[in-house]
Length: 529
Image 1 (tube, rainbow, N blue to C red):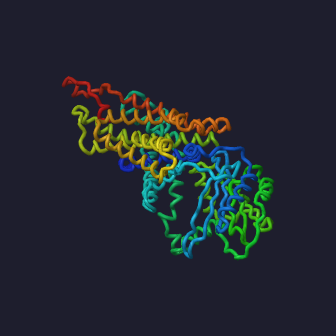
Image 2 (cartoon, rainbow, N blue to C red):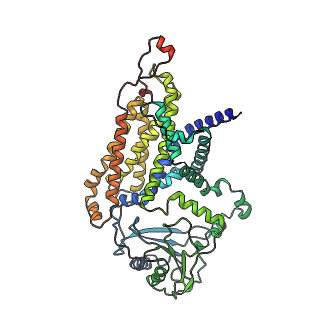
Image 3 (cartoon, rainbow, N blue to C red):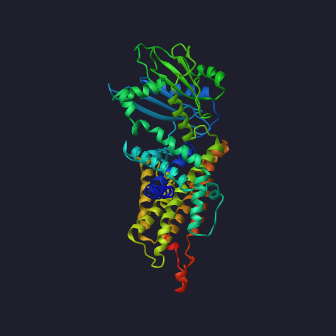
């Protein structure tokens, strides 16, 4: 019974990994890129330049802009620049019709002058972030599919732990050049090395959409009024009703020193102004909490916008479930991580992506050996082979295509941000066609080689198309653009090495005793991998 249970877990681990592996690879890869979402957006909008942080000046410039351009808005939001996001972001919400949500207007200002920045239209790193959990599908289908995939991943991790009894021995075992054995050793080592990270990422992703996939308690308490649930969960975001009595507002920058006294200089993350220009107007100053996992109760200061008087120096008390959910959210997103820890998150994410990829390669390789002599795969294995190539090598080309489109598309092109996304899916679709037309090893080599050229060529493309911005960023001490180019070059080199591994060469398969008696022959097995 014990052995039968482990065999059942191995079967479940194998088949769940295969059926959802291609989707999970894309989710893990784009999620890993999302750890540098702000940096990717910065590279894709080089017109937004970094300046020395000055919270008071930024608040003053943002207030002046909003008073001129959105005096009738029901809410203003000011997102102050930081080391990762150099732009001064302003959002104005215009009142909507009764029962309808208001319309948001988002603009990016220069943090030094307050002038509106005419940056190229792009979704930036937000594309990878939202694809990670929405898969570029209509609501709620993408979220449902991503949540199901997360549950499958969680089950695959648990069954993997059950299947591998000798965890520590397998972690320290790697036999290079041994074909399937090497792939299995790598798969086991990658899975065990960052197992706590994988469990945390997968479990926390299930928590985020609990209200969607397990809505029973929510519906029994709030019925169809889900808005009441979120208002109770995040009371500070509820916009009070205006008194409809005009009243002048104080200069918001005069409130900054009180926040600096409590939190330290340049620790303000955002300001929310409810009912600007009304007697009921209030200013909520939020502390930047990206340096901690558990958010303290004193992270919000509330002022009267008309008098400047401090009304509250703490956020409303949170229920324990809300605190736990926020902590898991910050752990999942790596919001609290500094540069070094964020790179560690990135490396762990790449390890998880590689773990999924090695699992897919192993599944096919084990079954393809039976057809090595014939050199022709049956339809079902050929289908898996095509999907393996396109979902891994093809996806890498598609990611690079987004960056190339960002630099090559005309700045004034209508719907420019949508064309970047189309470039992603067009290249990804072409990779499927290419994998269908070319044999396995050749398709791997050509797609990995193309990805290597696309990534390694990005620094050259950047110099040719954005040299002015790149040089300006280096003079300002902003290394994000240069670091992105160096990372792209390193990625290109790694993909080039992987492509070289798929060069045409014979691999000797150790013959069985029967094959020795029948004059065993050498066969090439990489052609069917």
